[in-house]
Image (tube, rainbow, N blue to C red; front, side, top):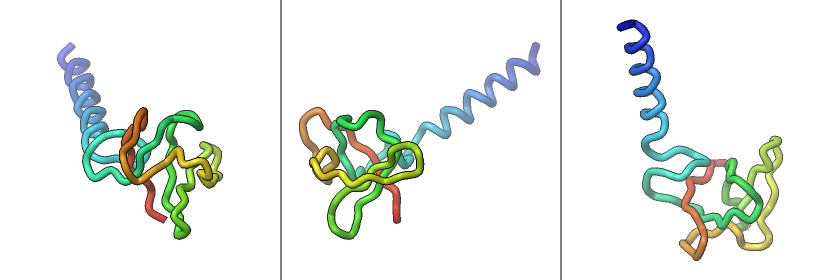
Length: 87
């Protein structure tokens, strides 16, 4: 029984460690550089292009340009903070 309890404790600690601090594509941490209102569904990554537009992942390896300003560098109503990817 102690072995199972130890495995559960280790798995729990590993999960909590993975959830803490800044991670690309997930809310958390500090120094957010993108705010998103959820218009295109769940955030699964993206990056700021050289042209100033945000490219968001469609979850299938494609990046689409946000022409409608659902991703912004500053906070706005109904938006959640995220970290962008570096390209």
